[in-house]
Image 1 (cartoon, rainbow, N blue to C red):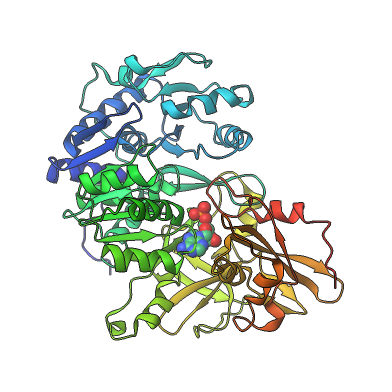
Image 2 (image 1 turned 45 degrees about the horizontal axis):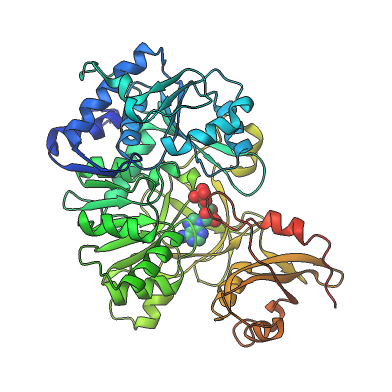
Length: 543
Ligand code: AMP
């Protein structure tokens, strides 16, 4: 027997409509690319979204067309999120920090019909214009007054597109599984791969995000997504904020400590989210300026491991709950969040920290398990580690137009292989031990490069560290530690290697250490170990 409940499609337009209808006077504040702070409301935003939808129709945009953005977090970018998806087109956010060739590859692979570009990224497009093989129209996201002279053909102006348009649009009835947005995951190997989200997956993800133990976004919050809107839709925060009716605060291009602080303070931000690098910069700024964060209640940190020093500083010195989250582009991205449970409140500070540095507990909607090389499920004992596989309604079932990459990432049972090697403990907290391609196998035993890196950066003389496995005649592979010294440090190799003694099994201690001026990173700030392996390909160990 079927239940007698309404079958309503879950669509993105319903989010902005809800925000405009019930939180119409709630503010959206942006640091604009032109300079000044821009303020308006959900009601204003919805009117402009409808104007843009009308403009799209006149430009000949059809359902399924990809509309690209190369833009910072700001109100125009938000309008594009809703206008493109609402008419059945696909909002394709591109990471402007990628290398030019990768951006050109992505634009060509997605066959973007229009490319919206912030003033800051016009030079990026100019640099690759000869490599783009589509005849995409370019729209600069500014007004006539700020429209630059540039080397691109037939450039349109964002504000001109909206001027004089009707602010009413009859949205089509979309199937909830219609594609709504596209984001390429750059990874560390091969070409970028496209993850194509649907209206349904995005709304379900937003519902999960607003839950208290996930991001806990509510109408009582002012939310500052520092995580870029080109990085997995700013972790879904714009959609979740519209669903909840939260005030949104966008940082534009201002990611430095002083600019982020200014918005946190002036807009009385209660919740923020971003990668560890941003919080390190903010922390430095706060320590130098002596400023405090009286309004900020909580911050979610993800994308890379959260160092305990950040948690301690924000919690002890600034009274802000600092919580670790893990996810992937392929997962929309939320997978786990690290809020402690009620029955953990009496643990010692040290025990609590040992959980807070883990990547967190599964959000409802994400099924996860760790498996060995033969696909057998491993126990949740905090010790056994294997590859984490996941499935759920906001997790991809395959890449956009890329069967080869899809075959590699979806296993025979339909689960997504994350490439993260993890433990899960008795309380359900997941911890990443390594990326599957980075784990070092020495004499048949696994060594976690991440754990060695964490120890190395605990040494006062080391600013940044990477560990890679190099082939070894006896042990198959052995770890090489590659470090950047802290400013003014005098560390010697011996001295750093001795630092590992007693912290890990002896056979884990790297054979050798190499000092470099800097380490290579991907456009999203992750260590580029493929590059390091190339650099050290000819290195042979002394013993
Ligand atoms: P991306 O798709 O660019 O967001 O990258 C996803 C990958 O980033 C994951 O598979 C992890 O390897 C890494 N990652 C994401 N969040 C965390 C975290 N909290 N701690 C450590 N690594 C993370």
